[in-house]
Amino acid sequence: LYYFMVQDITGRGRGVCYASVAQESAPYLDQMVRSFVEFVGDTSKTSCVMLDKDESEIAAIKQQMPRATILLCTF
Image 1 (cartoon, one colour):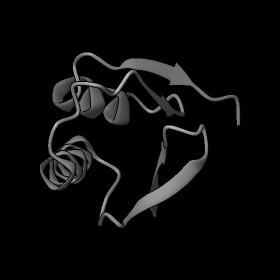
Image 2 (cartoon, one colour):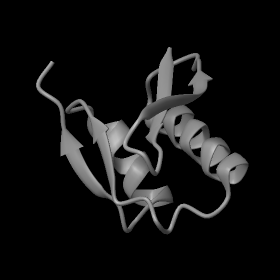
Image 3 (cartoon, helix red, strand yellow):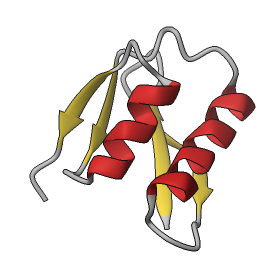
Image 4 (cartoon, helix red, strand yellow):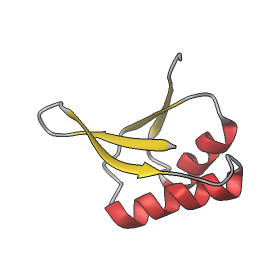
């Protein structure tokens, strides 16, 4: 289960999407991120995305949100 959260203009975090994938492999994760981007629309103002160290997740974000800085969380 994946949880997409955004920070609004007041600095408050808000959950905006839950996603479930059949496998945590590159094609599934890429489709998940692509669907999120299509739903949200313009992601050009996305400044950063926080992920764990999963290379497939990182690749999917870099593909769909190339301007975003990838931050790695420590959990």
